[in-house]
Length: 386
Image 1 (tube, rainbow, N blue to C red):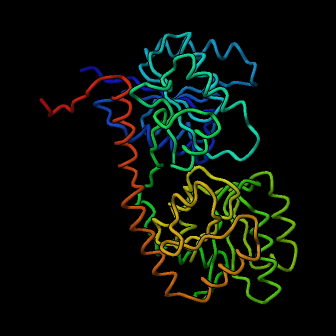
Image 2: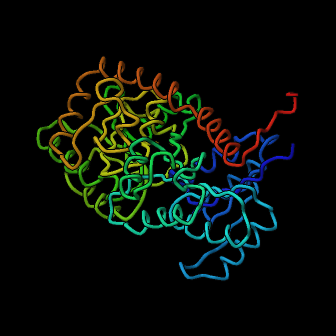
């Protein structure tokens, strides 16, 4: 049987969470069963990585929300590639993709919701509801789901605001290559040495965009509290974003003397290998990918108790959870782990086991493959199957 032609469409191809999910899925789907390509409304570093992995990539170069000529280009691309399933990621790609898919005659569209959006975005949920009422693949009563949620929290959040029934959704958690994040002892020693972290010092890591969503202000406030008590651990911050000036201001003060801002890093494994715990004080998430990667590296995670993080971190088993936007509670958890090496080891070991069992990348890819086949109404056989 001919391979299913699947195109993944995302808003941009910058190296961020949703984009990395697209990358992993595109390069890991069985190429004997699926002909996979990726398109971005805008480009980014992930385009090069995808091409290196042998995945066809199309960058549309959209300049703004009303760049209609690029929509025409997308319609032509979908027709030329004879796409069977368009898989959209993030709202703007979904908006453009569904219109283009309709005009191009693409028979199936599926969309992944990556976050439990806490900001006021009612039009996103109204659009999902409108598409369902027009008879799209997410329509109530359909046998196959048209919306993928990356966690149960995301599904519940989106369903409550869109009014769509649970049958419109498939929950497929994001996946982690567990072996790829195993601790690298050489990287640990080299990075700690380069960052001036002593062998006996506790190093806390933050990995993520420097944005209000990630609770950077809460983390810095907690570090100020710890410093006032003479308890502040070392902190490595990997990532960049709009709150970079606030971080730089913190670094200029007394409380920031033990903190190192790394900026954007390619080698997340190296950062996690050097650290003794990850802190993730987000205000909202969809799936705590940084938490899952840290757990794969055997690190305990201190996380805000918000949707998307409580789907990943098991409080008291793989990490410690605190109320969001409470620096005092966050500081207390950091202090607790800093002084308890045994607890850190136990949480880290349990975390690695949990990720291997529930969030392995192979499970994620297999679930997508099964859903694609269900949506298209076909059964694809491997070359050695009858």
